[in-house]
Length: 200
Image (cartoon, rainbow, N blue to C red):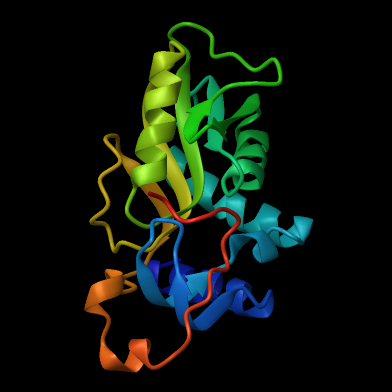
């Protein structure tokens, strides 16, 4: 498949799941956008999740090889299912970091073996902030982050997470500061569809 074919296929999966939303959305970063990708709805179907993550695993293999990683690590909540399914594709263990008082940490008996080669897995990367925070937590716990992976990179390839990022699809979806909205977006009431509150 060409990149265009992959993009069309992935967006068709999102539309079929009712997960490609248009309107005025406030993202978890606090930025505003005319589009929102609700990966949780896409992951509701195990068959769809398996198809998408198999495609993503293929791209990760093409970039890093088959045996580049020891562990998949995801930031909760968004990356949790994607990370689990990608770990299944690679026959690796999967753990996740969760926020405690605003900072990612490992709980529930999870630990990172010293020097473990980690793949950090997200659902959607926008600014890359939560990815960088998760990577910092992995490194603080002793892991070696080799790369990152996400279903969607909505920065169009501009987000810097500090390691190579492999995305199934890279989209350029505009984001705006709240005080710099275009008139067309400012005229629509904003909604916050994500799973957590706005970042300070």
